[in-house]
Length: 142
Image 1 (spheres, rainbow, N blue to C red):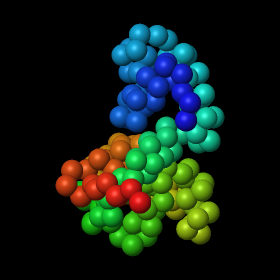
Image 2: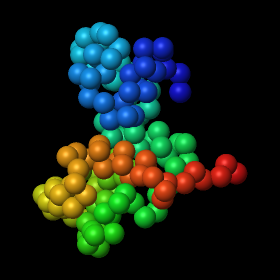
Image 3: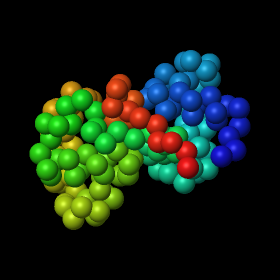
Image 4: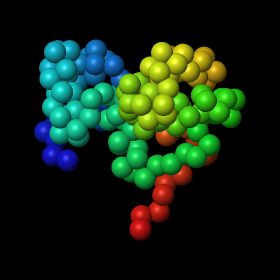
């Protein structure tokens, strides 16, 4: 992926879960500039959200975490199906289509998952899934 120097700076902060406002403060330019760089990153990666950028980043590095983040064992079967879709970074609409549920049901499960895992956003779940301590392993390159 060919990112400009500024896009790379935004990308590096984006995968940590930093907000656009925080990224702008750290790098030293406007939120509008961060939004423009983010849009370029999305286009180059063929994604539609920061959540997808983060998931692609960790998946591309070969990270795996089959057990999920701490607390994932408390999820019901239906919640785990939604969680497994969520960690790929796809949208709620895509999740619903993939597992044959309504968007309303997916939203409900996501709310319960966030409560059980003690998170505030879907992005936070994705980041914690791939970065949660001892269960995270690197796949060996073939």
